[in-house]
Length: 632
Figure 1 (spheres, one colour):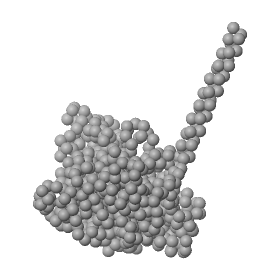
Figure 2 (cartoon, helix red, strand yellow; figure 1 turned 90 degrees about the horizontal axis):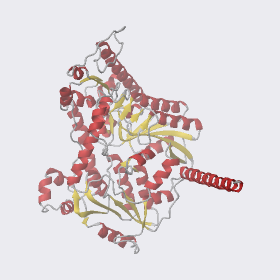
Figure 3 (cartoon, helix red, strand yellow; figure 1 turned 30 degrees about the vertical axis):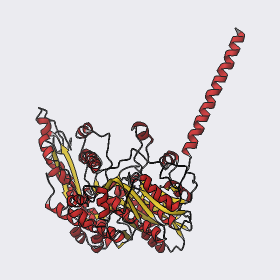
Figure 4 (cartoon, helix red, strand yellow; figure 1 turned 60 degrees about the vertical axis):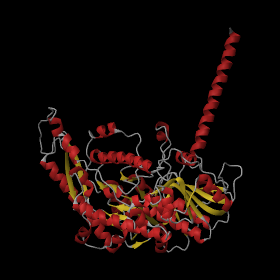
């Protein structure tokens, strides 16, 4: 027995040792994953291939490990516009790159300013006498905008092109709310502040239609001008004036119709397109049909990091809806962005601050937190410049007010200086089922706001006063920044949205230009001869760097949200419609605090369908609390 006990102790010791060893190996592997950085890949002579199987965005969204574990599908792959443009521009002077190829078969879309920037980079490659080839299955407006800058644009034989132009329908819930006996208590300032209209009307007001007609008209004209300049043979009027007749002239063949209208150059499948690229850059004989030599976007960017010469200029990115807390990247968490700015200023490593805004607005408190951090940076002597992307409206303009100079693009949407709040109450809904409320109040505000028993007149008066106070502060901030009186700003405010061209004329922005122009201006203001941009919070480490490197392996996502024909496009937009309904209901019932948000601006963006959000989620959200005043 003594011998057996000794043997048993030895076996237990071995077991404990093996467990400890495996634990050490596990934590070592975990540490390695958390500290992993992308390793530059070998750049092969040939083509730079950019497969845009996701949307082009200002700032890439953070990848949530829980989403990967619970969703059952990989998150939508996103491409930062500046990364795509930088890679293409760098390829123009890289002797290893013989051609640039953009695969748009599963393109997730992009906004006008971003695609113009990518188009300008493609023009630089063509000016260096290198071919730029684009292929796609179904070209929509954004893909047509990119293809216009290509030396060769190919469409699949079963594909085609469709140009719709900006605009579309907005959902209105007044009839539904009346049927459910839900009261929407609306508090707003601004004749053109149409963000509350879905809850108060069954259609758009004449003022809202007037405003949107002007903005959409300007964006549409800018789009047509760019496409026509890059591709003179494109007959946009023919395609949009009578799309049915245009298609009938080609016997219903959408691919041939796209060629005849000058939107694309050639019809061919993926293999034929690959053979054409192979003829230009060299064939990959070991790969499948249509393989050619080349390098993916991720490997090329890893091989060509941004230069770090001279003094650094900090770039704070305010992208997506502005929300309270640490949200982002991809959403503009007020606390997160303010902390990034404060830490950058405290470090003393930066000579200037450029704020890149691509946001329709959101939380007032979050926007004010970001604005205050920018003001503190300015007080420390840093030149502050704002660069507006596609959107810088409402809360997006709020955070722009401290800038000494504001740059925007003609297709930028800005303004929307106005405030509103919507609070739903359900007293009539409950009464129809025999549920009422009563009680004892010590003051008129006791138990208020009461969304089940109804809002008191005193609460409604206070809410309206609060909205008016927010609006007065908004006017004051803008007036001080633009060297005008509040009355002068009020005349161009009232919730009205402006395109970049008109915004410059009325003094809301200073000059046209992109992020590069804003950086150059900031460098000049800081008296720098040599400088580089450093995007705050952009260096992905830990899980983010590890997960991003997996997603950027160069493989195409077969589950990407992309339409492959017209019926697929219709289905995709129906999914987007459901996502929009959820967002509208969340806006009505979500307790998000005071908001500065431009509803019209948000509707110009791509909507990634929420595949797992159903009607049950909508019904659950309808029982939530309403949010306080909003700047939207």
